[in-house]
Length: 285
Ligand code: GLN
Figure 1 (cartoon, helix red, strand yellow):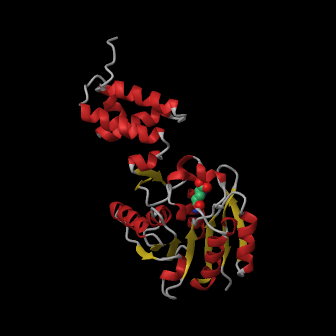
Figure 2 (cartoon, helix red, strand yellow; figure 1 turned 90 degrees about the horizontal axis):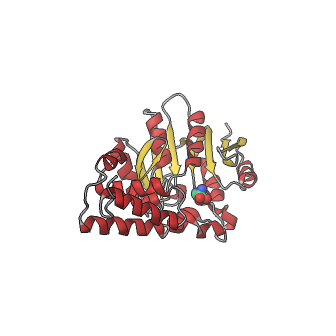
Figure 3 (tube, protein in one colour; figure 1 turned 30 degrees about the horizontal axis):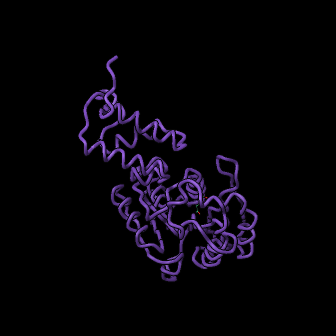
């Protein structure tokens, strides 16, 4: 076997893998291929086929810079500028939260609760748009709305909608404040900030690099969940549903919030890790 040149494609993948493994990154091999492939605009198969191709000084410098950012903890989703959610290729960057696999439970429950006729759905704090885009893809008849307090997040969401060829009505503002008292919705979904500001997880992993405003809420993480529960009741059609994602230990508190607001059939559902992650309730009428 000829020796692998350090500045060849294969050499750079190997160097990146070592650097990421030394930084304690679990899937160092996979991430090394993703980062080098991202910079060279090549997939894994062509990188293997052309492994001995020599790279320019600039290319090597760019790869080492990107790998260095990852080794320092920057999320792979931000470095690649993408994350898959509900099998949709979404663009993401530092202006929005990185969509999580457990949030697909919220999409599943919402699809279960959407009526079979054309309906109107609102996603509060839409971020990258992941939830409402997934619902719009599944239900082409859906009148889909999304709001966010962050102009940056809304720009990411609108870009994702455009790339996917989906029409969403976007609103900037906190929860339902931005939206006039009409129309009413058949379903309101939200994955709001729910992390307690003193939660040590905020100092680990991807969370360190995500917008704090998308993660943290007062009152032990319950403040925004409470606001949304309070605002939603009057904005749903009778029989409409509110579905909220929350922390693994917040389900009892969120059920209490919904019951307090007069919601019926209040129930929590478990994510694939076994945590009660989504709570839903039906508007009376
Ligand atoms: N599920 C996220 C986490 O704890 C938090 C997302 C949120 O606050 N909505 O990593």
